[in-house]
Amino acid sequence: MNIIKLYFLWGVGMVINVADLKLHPRTSQEFRLQENFSDELLAHLNGHFLEPVKVTIKFENTGRILVGQGMVHTVINLICSRCLKDIAHQVNTPINVVAASPDEDHTEAEEYLLELRDNGDVDLSSSVEEAILFSLPLNPLCKDDCLGLCSGCGVDLNTRKCRCEQQEIDPRWQKLNELK
Image 1 (cartoon, rainbow, N blue to C red):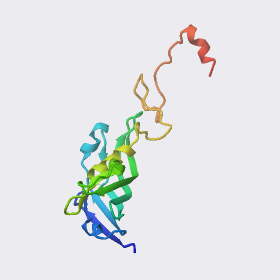
Image 2: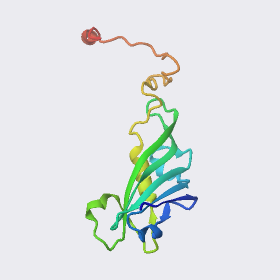
Image 3: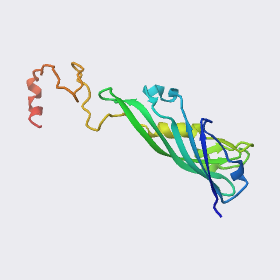
Image 4: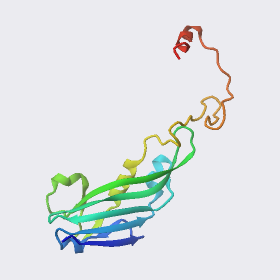
């Protein structure tokens, strides 16, 4: 029989307690967590969180390990890599984890493995942070066809035309213009 219990945890960090689930093989339990993450996580991107991080995750007791699958949602302020405008970037990314006691061997799931503490606590913080960071674009853009800033005068080419003077082209390169 599959029993699903739903728990809402606000403001307690990304630590859940699965002690009850551990005692009932072949059952599952769903958790919903919400936490305000530190902007330090995004400091290298000059970004910050606009909303709390929300996680919905369902853990299933397979008999040997606890397998968790869910989603991470938040909104992050990033800077467009072309025009330097602020962007509200939606994060909706999956999270997959495995929780097991540290004394057991689980090399097949080592990449996703979280420590299941003796009291039944599992800390999802590092996995949630990793999911958020992996979901972020390498070069955030405010829109796909962002024109960026003029390298000469610095004007935002999305809103105004450049006022820079067109330079004379070296006659040796003139034939390249004809290829357009």
